[in-house]
Image 1 (spheres, rainbow, N blue to C red):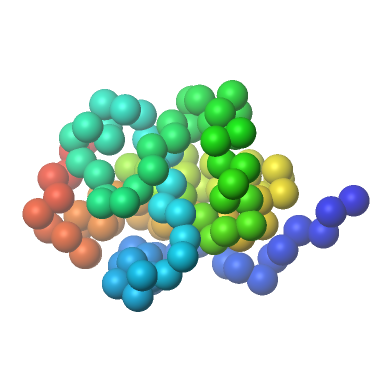
Image 2 (image 1 turned 30 degrees about the vertical axis):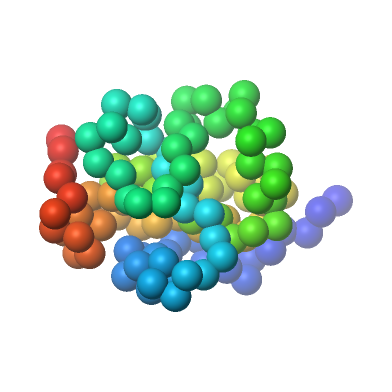
Length: 116
């Protein structure tokens, strides 16, 4: 039985993610929205892997299993589900970006369009 790493909080806020980006920290920013949402607006450097396909495409993340991964979506609901699922798959350094790209647009980069 694998022991889960609970030392990382489940959620991280957009300011903490921005600080990691600015510090050029080694982490994967994973966008779990759908392609159409990604086409509207994205955070530079984020890798798209939609929640709807992640179970069939988990092999694409194997090389990142030991890395810090931060998952985001539109508001943080889907990314929380993906974060919890990845943790259950022994991805122990995964966090959810609370508030999603909508919070990013409001608090970090107002040039990023918001959508309904």
